[in-house]
Length: 482
Image (cartoon, rainbow, N blue to C red; front, side, top):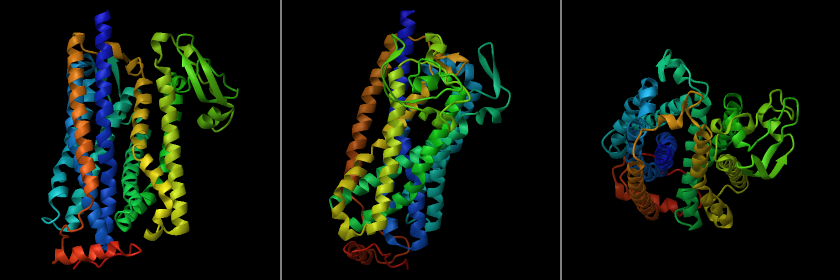
């Protein structure tokens, strides 16, 4: 029994490691792909050569993230057959099919057109290159759709029945479009896009703080602001809808998110916990600061609820989530970051409206650029925190209400899992520092404005015009393509 428990715990730790690390890279590629589509489209529409050089500069970071994302994702896929063989056997008819769709439809589409996006600037017409960039971005986000569909099915299984411990698919479309799927995909879609926008904005702010190529990076920041002004509030709204779904379909997870031990009866005021110190041993909160009526407004838009909010004590300890403190504060971390990012966008847009964010005035806003630099990694933290809530809060079930995590792990010796876990820690450490090294080199070097532009006959003349434009007080479009 002890050996089995250790194997399950180690396998869970290994999957958590691979998921948390792998998540860092596709988050940026899926969101930055959309930014590249926008920035390249602006180049084709306005003929502003600065947009072309933005597309070339930011695509370098895209390529770096794509490569590490592929390398770090392979161990994650192999684990289903190695560490979680009983799970794969039980649900493979659906789960494996959907992951196969992700590989054949989405990843292959992204990888196929990536070569044109990277090497095709001088080999295909500009419009064809833009189409390739669109296909790359679409493929990356199609991957998000299939992965979120599969994971949402684990949260709300649909489209079939379990017979003798094996899931038999009766309706693939119903299984794919399970109750959690739409909001889960939208929440992740906006999360990746918002994270990418603030990474781009944070890097742009770093250049502005140094007064390095101010007109160039003011332009990228303005594009980020226009997009983030739409994305940031939408992400908060979709996050709210996702929380409502948890209230409806996974009440035990909601109780863990709120560290709610006692049931709040229908018709009574439902307060929202601001700060708490959960104690699972005593099934109480040592500290619990609440805002009266707020949970009711969040769940049903009124202080008193029509339905009860069930407390953790409604379930036996073996049937409810553990690590309540981790779930509770991961959820609040995600909320706090979302509000900070939305506030930062609002403040920056207000300053833009008042001053125009002109190149000769940017030195007055060092505090603002530090705010953007600080925001750069926050999106990653929010995404990881959200997945902790989503997956740790689902426990003890791997398929909610149908299959326990302890039943899904392969019967491997603990030392074997520990060996593979240690190897992955070492490998991912190398990947991480390699990404920091090459990423910092790309950022330190900056954009290469001497790159030849499709359609221009004299690259040397272009370089002179770009450098002259960098000394102008505004960011007016340069000459159009010939």
